[in-house]
Image (cartoon, rainbow, N blue to C red; front, side, top):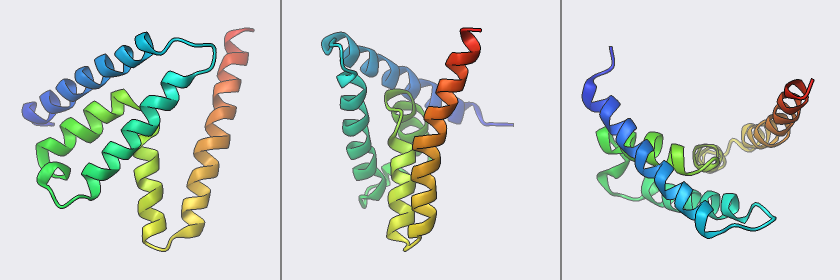
Length: 120
């Protein structure tokens, strides 16, 4: 069973992240998906900074609040990007490349298949 404090941390972080993302989408309304780009690049940079800094924010309940909850709801790319950077930092270039291709190409293909199925 998952402890209540951990669930609360994820839920609270998710609520904050979702509200922040919605706020960016409300401010940046254009034909091109700039809002998605803005939240992804801002979230990736901030999440990576917090994950790889020497602080205690990348551990325990704070980790759940920030990385699973807040950044999970705020961005669509932060976890993918941090994991890819970690693979590259560990010298796992082939695994990082596979991760990039799978998440970029296969997930876009999955979205296209989902759209096609929805329109049947």
